[in-house]
Every structure is written in C-alpha cells, then in structure tokens.
Length: 247
Length: 173
Image (cartoon, rainbow over all chains, first blue to last red; front, side):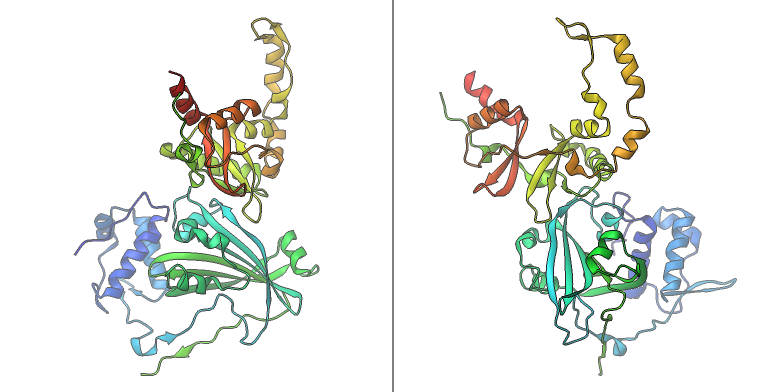
C-alpha cells in the first residue's frame, strides 16, 4: 500500500492534511476499532511533522468521534457513531428553504477573482489560482431574505461564468453540465454581524446580527464550492430534512 | 515583406493574469500581486492585473507603476532639473521630496478601491488583427499591453509589447 504523505507545497495546513490522512486510515479499517494508534512520537517520525501538528490532528479526530483518549494508556479508535444502516439519505439543495417557498433570485455578481483571506485554503487551491465568484440575492414576495456568495475554483467549470445562475441551481449545473457530482456537504451555522453593504441590501437597519450558513460542497475529497449565506434576521428560517435509510 | 503573425498566435491567455473585481482595495491587490510574483514562471512583463466589473467585463488594467502612483501621488510631482539638457534631477530638491514619500498617508491611500488607480481600457485589438496593427496601436497610445477582444466584446487574451516587438522586428531584419 502506498502511504499517504504530507505535502508541504499544498496550501492546506499540515495538521489538516494529517487529520485527513489519519481519518482515511480509520475509515478504511487500517486501524481497526478499539486498536491503539501509534504514539505521538511515532506519528511525528512516520509523517515527518512536529508534535504540535500531530496533537492538533489527533484533537480534531477525538472531537469528531473518530478517536478516544484513555488517561495513562493511549489513544484508541472509536466505534463509529453512525453505522452503515443508519446512514442518512439526503438530497442536497443549495438552499435550506422550506419546501414550497417560492423565491426570486437576482444575480448581483458573476465574475472572477483571486483568493483573498483564506479562500485558497477553504477551496484547497493554489494561492494564485482563479475563482469564480457569484453573489445572489434571494427574495420572497419581493422582500430580500438571503445574500448568498459562492466561490468555485475556475478551472473546474470555466463556462459557469456564462450560465444562467438566477434560474438554475449550481448543484444541478455541476451535475448535468459539468459532470461533477456533489457527494458530501458540510454546513456550519453561526451568528455573524452584517456589514454595511449587507445591511443595506437586506433592508434591515436596526438589527445587525444575522445567521450565517457556511457550506462546503465536496465531490469525493475535492472541494467544489464554498458558499456563504447570510439570512435576514426575521424573514424565513433555514430548513433541512433528513431521511433515514431503512434496510 | 513576409506577412506578420496574427494577434491570436502571439497573445497570452487571459488566465495567466490575476483577476480583480473593481471594489477590492489597493491593499488586497498588493497582497495578490505578491502571491503571483512568487511563481516566477508566471512572471510576465509587464506585470499587470486585470480589473473586472460584477458581470465579468474588463474595466481596466493595473500595473506595478499604477500601484506605486496610487500609494504616493507625489511621485507625479515635477522635479526641478539641475541640467535640463541631460535630465539630471536637482539632487537637493530630490532629497527634500524623497524624505516625505510613502509615509503614513500611503497606508490610508492603500484602502482605496483599485478602480481608483486602474488605467481604463480604451484601446484593444481583435484576435485576427496583425502584429503590425498591434504595434501601431501600442506605440500610438503609449501602452505596452493591449486586451484582445473577440467580436469586440469577449476578452480572450492580452498581447504584450515583447511578442509584438519580436515579431515586427523579425520582419525588418
């Protein structure tokens, strides 16, 4: 078996890379449930990284339920919380909107930019590669409810710049036009503060706190899109439905 | 005289250049310029960034010179010449100017949007134009980099003085 290695040329942080490598080992069963994983020192030696890097990766794996630490005896592989039979079967939509809500979409921006802040890390791309940037305003009954900004590596689908993104969902376009199947979505929901421009667009002047939904769309292990949606403080709610696969 | 190559044979793909929306600040553009300078393979002359509007239309071009001018408008100030015939600057006058350049004010100016400092696109060529026409347009408009537009609309590349010079000078030799 070829050992996955840390690549220092990648924009990804080392501990994130190590996290992914160790996670893969656990998921593939290379490290069976209840087995003890190598010590910090061994992991440092195997992957050629510092103790701090190993520690961060392991802490994240513990946090996400892959590993458990036992005082005085070491770190062990956990029994996965979700077993095969309980896997949720979900269909992805770009928007977490109540089914049946009719919304209008206005495309505010559909252009190309370079990665600023940590967009290169979020998308797993080189820091000098181009990104398609789409900003859309969703309205229900002419009332603005959601600003949605999406970032997609340009080389994945260059002609997305000319596509009708007001009426087509990006996920459908990836699937039908570009042959990219989104297989996994990670959603993060937090409170954020609207900037002046967002407040102006949403027309909510008094309250500056809003819900922020950050979404990472993956095909396999590749990030296809990062989206950031801020929701009007009052109008509508985020909605997600999961269906359990019954065997 | 043999026929000169066309612009499309000599141009550089548009995605070799950093793309910046016009509302980015000069500071953000400087950060991105720095990243694209690290990769020497892509270090193309003249170093430039392309400025786009929200619908991906090219608005203008920013070069290293435009950034420096934007950070320090006093670079454009005329300086007295000690000897106008050979264009030697008056060293005492220069020393006085130099001392105040790129001070705190420049940090404030770096927060301006890049469309403040870009050179708006006024001249362009078509992919089927000849290198000779590109040379004419460059010299005539005092530019060293021209956008290449398909059907006068779609940006597909850029043509540089370097390639135009190589081609045109080859015709003469």
